[in-house]
Amino acid sequence: MAKRFPVGPLSEHDDDWLTVWAWLANRSKSAQAGSLVSIGINEKKTEIERILEYVAKKRGMSPDELFEKILDGTIDTDQASPEESE
Image (cartoon, rainbow, N blue to C red; front, side, top):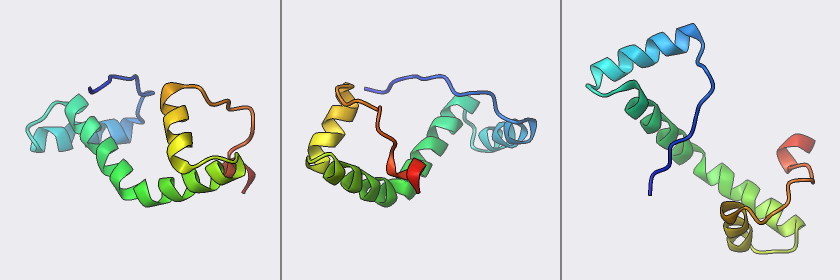
């Protein structure tokens, strides 16, 4: 099920280009922004999976276990992620 979430304000430049892109695609800005998030996730999925594997290994669990714990909100975030320490 799709979930809505707030996104911080865009810069004037990005908002203008999103408006134009949405108009050209005959979509609302919200629908176009959602599409852009999906595109970004698909482009970064391999990198996200690599980081997930690394963090899971550091925490002594499988990537699948970590994935589920992140989704259900049962994993703590008090340790810095690998990206923060790189």
